[in-house]
Amino acid sequence: MAEEQEMEEKKTRMQDLLQEEYLKSLDGIEDGQLVTGTVVQVNNEYVFVDVGYKSEGRISREEFASVPEVGDEVKVVIIAKEGKGGQIVVSKKRADFKERTDELKAASESRSPVLGKFEKVIKGGFEVDLGGEYKGFCPLSKADVQRVEDPETMIGITDYFIIDKFHGGTKLKSVVNRREYLDQKIKENKEKFFSTVQIGDVVEGVVKSFTSFGAFIDLGGFDGLLHINDMSWGHVTRPKDFVKKGQVVQLRLINIDPETQKINLSLKHMQEDPWTTFEQKYNVGDTIKAPVTKITTFGAFIEIEPGIEGLAHISELSWTKRINNPKEVLDVGDVVEAKILGYDLDKKRVSLGLKQLEENPWDTISERYPIGMTLSKPVVKITNSGAFINLEEGIDGFLHIDDISWTKKVKNMASFCSEGDVIDVVVIRVEPENRRIRLGVKQLEGNPWQTLRHDYPKFSTISGVITNVTDFGVFVKVMGDIEGLISKYNLVGPDEEFTDEVLKKYKVGEPITAMVVECNPSTQKLSLSVKEMVRRSQQSEIAKYIHSDNENDTYSLAEMMRYKDEDKEKGDN
Image (cartoon, rainbow, N blue to C red; front, side, top):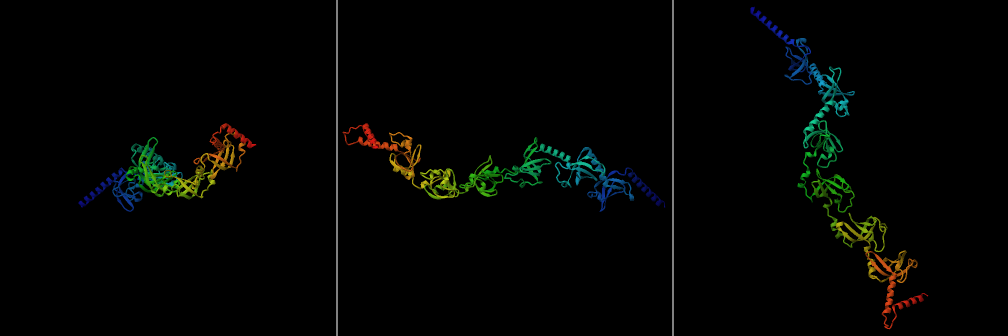
C-alpha cells in the first residue's frame, strides 16, 4: 500500500511539474504575437506547425499560396494560447498580413520598390495586388513609361512599384507608381550600358518597333537603332524579313555616342564581310547566275551573293536594242546570267554585262552589209537631217537628207518618205567601231555631176533652159537636171557694162547658151558665163586675122577692132 501511494504521489508531482513548465512556456506568449514555427505534419485539410509550445498549431491549407513540406519554417500569429481542446490557435494569413504591413510601411517611407501584380482595370487605372490582402491603385498614367493604349494588356503583369501613399488595413487602397520604378531602372541600365560596353561588343535586346529605315531594339528600357543597311550584307527591302517584333536578338555594337545617347547596332556584322573573300571566288570574265534586286534608269543591280551586288549598266544590256530604261528588258526578281567585267574592292563595286554572253553582231557587220549592197528596208524614224532605216533587229542604218538626190535639194525629209515606208537604199559607208552604217538613195544611179564634168570640161559651151531670174543672176538647168548659175556680171560681153535692164532680157523657160567656167561634183557647183563665151569667141576671131596666110596684110589689131565695131553698127542699123 505504501509503495502504491508513493507511486501515485510521484505521478502527481510529475504532472504538476509538467503543468508548471507548460504554464511557464506560456508566460512569454501574448495573443497577436508573430512567431516562427516548423511544419511537422501536412494532411488533406491542415498544416500542423510546432511553435515551441506544448501543443501544435493547426492551419487550414487554404491559407497557403503553396502547400509547404514537413520541416519548412513558417511565420504565424498567435490567436489564442488555448483554444477548444486546449490547442494553441495560430494563423498564417494574419502573419502574412502583419508581415506585409510592416514591409509596405517601410517601403513607403524609404520609397523602395515593392512587388505587385496588375489584377484588374478600374476607373482611372488599375487595381494592384500587393500581397497580404493589400490592394493598391495605380493610375493609368503611372502604369508604364509609354502610353498604355490597351489597359487590358497590362492585366497579369507582375512587377515592382513605388508606394506614393500608403494606407494600413484593407479599407483604402495604397497609391502605387510603376512608372517611377521603371524610369529609375532604365536610368540604372543606361548608365551601366554606356559605362561598360565598347564598340564591337555583342549585346542582347528585344525588337521593339519598325520604321521605314530599320528597327528599334529595346536594350533595357532604352533603344538602339538597327538600320536597314546594317541588317544584312545583302540587299534589304523589308526589315521584317530579317527580325520579328518581340524577338530576342544578339547584335554587334557599331557606334555609341554618350553625348547624344545614340546607339547603332548591326546584325550583318555578326558575320564576316563577303567582300573580304571576293577575289578568292571570282575573276574578271567569270559568268554568274543571280537575281536582279533593283532597277534604276541607268542600269540593273544583280546580287552575286548576299552582300555583293554588281551593276549591269544600261549600255551593257544589249548589243543592238535601243533600251531607254532597263525595265524594258528586266524585272526585279529575274534570274539572269552576266559576265564580270571588272571590280573595285575599295569602293565595293562590280561591273557586269549581259550582252557579253552573246555574239556582237557589229563584229561581222561589214561582211553582212558590204559597201555597194542594195537593200529594200523600212523607215523606222525620221529626223530633220535624215531617216533611220531598219536593217535587222537592233541595227539601223542612216540615210542623210543630202544622199537622196544628186541634183534636187530636199529641205524636208518627210516630203521624201514616211515611217513605215519600205525604200530602196545602198550601203555607202560602214563603221563597226562607231556602230554606224550610212545609206544612200542617189547612189543607186550614176552621178550626173561626174558625167557633166566629163562631157563638158571647163571652157566648153553648154546649152540649157532658164529656170529662175534673180537679182544676182540667172539659173539655168542643163543635162541631168543639174542647175548652174550665170551671175549678173557674167551675162554681158567683156566690153559691155551691166545694168538692171540686162536682167529684163531673160525670161524663165527660154533657152540659153553659156560657157562652163567651174564644175565641181563634190560641192555640186556649176558656174556658167556668157561674158567668157563672148571673150573666147572674140579671141578666136582675132587669132584668125593674126595667123592669116596673107603675109602682106599689115592691119593693126586696133584697126581690126575698129572695122569690126563699124560692121556691127551697120548691122544694127
